[in-house]
Image (cartoon, rainbow, N blue to C red; front, side, top):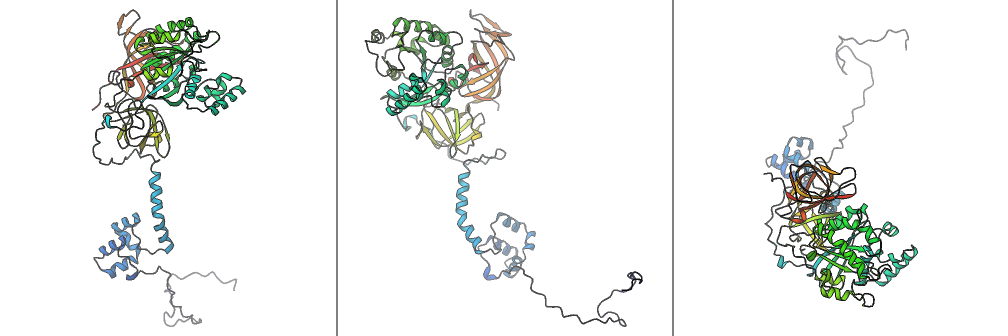
Length: 599
């Protein structure tokens, strides 16, 4: 190369050069090799008439666009890019229905073999999926539900079912009595009792072995204190029973309220032992608070069992028994119990079973046979189990609208709600409304005491499987209803009795805050207005500014969220409530008026 040659620049005005171009200008160059014939582009293989499936939705749409011209339709099929201008073709391709494009055989086989399995899995998974609240699927049109005839309802067991809640002060013997009832009714075998006896002896608590039947977790057994409400079932010849062993410690009163809200009969256990009865009944003891809560939560009968009558400090003394009865009777009357009709008294020994299933021997207690035969203290049965069988619940209405307050819920191949049927009947297949959300669900299955049944009457503890409900759709305190559903409000007018006040606030005024407990729901509330008060002497003050301990008042409560309730006069079990704050019950009340319904 010539390093000194000037830089080459193209001549803008020169004509464009082409091989064999303008005359007089030739370039000596070797003849170029002839261009090879263009190799066939590896395009997809064109479909032919024999490859087309006449039932393919895409082919049918393209043939329609080609106005029946099969040659034109084949050309369009072989040029997929041109098909995107037709909306009907785009819709077919998007839905995945069209399969004019050829696929390998393994893909076709996989689609065919796995389609049914995928569909089955999808159907099963939809049980646990939460329905989208933004665009709920339209409810299918169904035939109106036939009216349920309670007389023709088939139950798992025709015997009446009663819920018993054992309440009372700490160490009164509630768990021991509950466990002994299960043992005496052959619901716990001898080998299990021997194992519990050995475990209790290792803990140096020989007398606790019967309590271990109900107190199942390690914390309860180590401390000897019930924390959760224990549940168990037993039956007699005439009736079926569910035992609910409520905690006696003041720290667990909310748990006790949950158990007592389901009860038909309250068993108030008091200890006859010197010092223990006084500790439980004195101010601050749980005997008082539990008795008041039992009445507020709607127990029909209260059986006061004077326990530990075999204690060395008592020795079945009639004087000690009469002292306990005389002391507690006036307080129960102030709580609202009708003593002659609703309260029974019975001396027992929960540890050795005297007067539980079998009557105490006359050598140990010579005065009891005469007492019960005379009907003293409203008791005409010699034993506790015999007394249970004589009690009848008369206010259960199977023809009323269905009401089931939800005590708990869990997931087991679908959402299962747990509660007690307060009124009406429930059966699989019926549509129910969940308040306060107003969501409607179909009942897939019903269990009573864990046995599947075709229907459940009032008083039954049931498990209900709700079709389409997610776990977050059902919460404790909701109410399962039939039409018409109960009310859901955040303001109520009520009548309350102020039984106690916290040390920090001795009077109740507008703005006072507490926790509202009604059936199974629990919600923060505020007193917004006091309309009138009535003192112990019956003096009424209209437009009062405050209420103090011992007064009754009519006031308005505002709740933090809507709760499902009813007025006490229409449905008492949804119209009772208690107010608690700072670990104590300060008021009991009933709902007298609800806000007017919105159109």
